[in-house]
Length: 306
Image 1 (cartoon, rainbow, N blue to C red):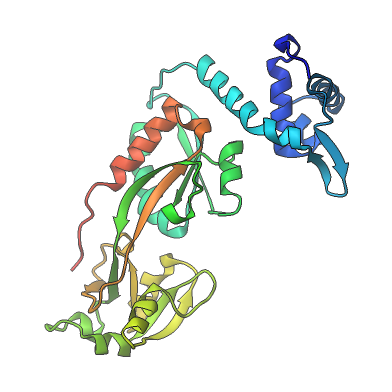
Image 2: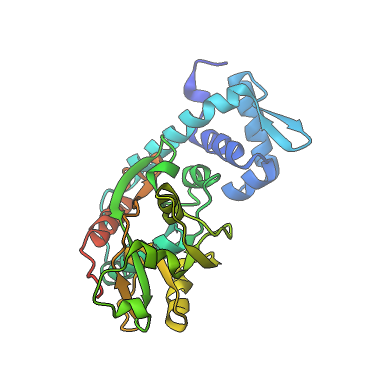
């Protein structure tokens, strides 16, 4: 390996970063808007400089050597620092044009992204928002590669080396259609009444038990779950046309005259909703502004329904 950095220019570092991310000369060339022979030539120079093959061929494509893997983090940090160095620190929301990509579940889409968009369109009308599904296994890679800018997750699912900030603490509430017999009851719903009702459960795996059922099991009780759906968004529609009830996050309860909140007879543990982002965008003025707006938006009080 050479100790003189004069032979290692910025373009070579960009090529190495792209090759590490893409695992393919062809894809790296497409990402860099260069020809495949040009990137192959840059790889040859990188191999000569570091005195290491950096990548070896396998049945699964190009595999980085141990030395290449060691270089991945430092190279990405250097490129990030250079980008911050040369980028203008000025940011004007009214004229800024960019695409901001957010990973969100359907819950976070309703509870966070929708109110954020409402404010964003008034203050930064030219910023476009792209919402993508949360993929816990690929989230870190997506953030580090710039495929995502922000992930709306929980502390438990956030990799430790990402930046993170809690947005709010969520509580569960019990909801039913306004026509439900217990919605008009003057007395509080008992635990026995709660367990006798037919419930809707949200489960992406199609399960019929969740955190509420775990709490009931600790008390030696169980409820009737008649419907399992994979999205919170359809729950209000089902409640309006049935006499079922559902335990859902409070921020998802719509201001709807056809729905009523019924006090829970047992406490159900809530959860923390947070946002996570990569070091790559940590100091970017535009990203800092959007994250601050997100925090300000969701921390405004939400009215209760009755």
